[in-house]
Image (cartoon, rainbow, N blue to C red):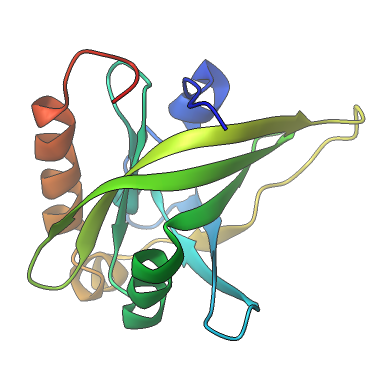
Length: 158
């Protein structure tokens, strides 16, 4: 499959920063375990970012299981929603960068589907707190994602 640019609708959903005491979107991120079953984890915008040229999605993953799955298969699916549509993004890992408690994956979009029947959707969400931000090390993951975004080549395809 050829790489695609990240649609603006999806990129915009990944740009915000989780605010303490606010409800924030939780994004299911699905890898495939060694037995062939889906392994689902929930990420937030502190762990996701589209590159400036929208040529890739950067994903910070702390889960040892998900990292092992990505090392083995190099594939994942990201699910997002806004009020009007669900967004399904099939991703292929192009590069990875290890950090102390997480790995950043540079993922190319290989397939994208915007799914809407005109039915209003409510994204899966969670109530962000300062404690969650500290426990999940959001400041560190977002700083690493932002730096990685700055380091990306200008070309939309690697």
